[in-house]
Length: 499
Image (cartoon, rainbow, N blue to C red):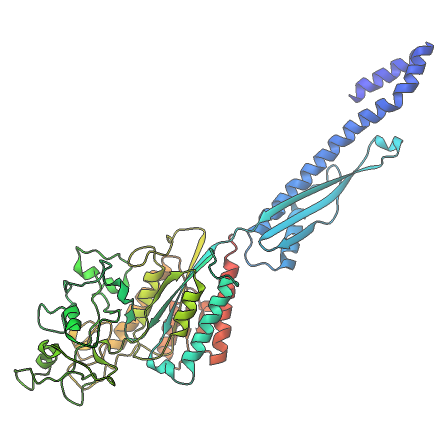
């Protein structure tokens, strides 16, 4: 175009005719301005594209970075903009970064110095570019598996736990009653876990005593649900036994055709009427066998017929599992508020029972299906496991049961190692470690807390259980426990920013 213009101007200049000279004078400046406008406008458009390209690179960078503050977002945007802007046709001013919640708006102005249009007083052309990005937010699924054993009733620990758990929920819910970006579950545990009486017709409970453990504490063929029906003022409260190994440490879905994958209802037998047995709540008088056969006394099911427990009797068939039912994953804050407020302290410690049900609550497979698939890229899964004690089911008791009744039954039945109960703690520790390894294999983030605990081996176990050492918290005080839960909650909120 410039060559054509030069040719025309040369012809105009050599033509001596008056009309042509007049025409030349009238058209020269507009022609120059028009051609100059085209050239300079093309350069301005190129600059605008360069600015837009650099802004897009900056927006994509800050929109996918985890946990940046407003100042860090601005600096990161500037760094990426400067790295991607090539000042070929013009110059750029400072970029502007505005963060409004999950939306980041980045804009910039630049200018092109004109090559020709200066002859008419236009020395520069200003150019503006703008882009906006919405930070991609992941969702959170969190389960709190929390020790509600008897030792939590001392020194205000259960109260501190309720306060800390409530704080975590408050932070994650960000003031919303039913947000769509977070679901939380709660699994209080002691010697066993209460899954809720509403699961009786679920299809994955062993309601007909099919499995090997369903009636192992009684005569063959006895169904513990029938025994509950015999007692006039007690009913099954929702607690369950652990499945037989290896299913107790697996996330394998239950199958009605495979009885070992089902969960048997919990029923702590009445112990023989001797002082060295805890949990004696029914008279053995109807038993007609050898009075010194303690095992036969305990297995005799006839003593439950029309049994009425006294009002003061808090033990009975639900002995060592008094926790309130677990809460499946939910985004309804009031449901969680109520469940947390109801936590109380009672019973002995079986950590793998609590952790296993924490895993099942967050798992996408039955028995609970509120969780999304493990490979869902839009969701972060996490479990917080807290205990204030070591695995302990009273392995040193001086009676034929060798332990308190718990999710694994009595030690003498063989599920906890040697029948004398001396290995119960070691076996439960190994089951805890196996569960931790399996959970971490699903890319579920595992946080662990030992709460005012002096036991070195269990601290080592819980530290190794955490996804990484920094996700293990060692023995905070009551007040510090709130800071721990707050730290975890804020960390999870930061992880909501997707990479």
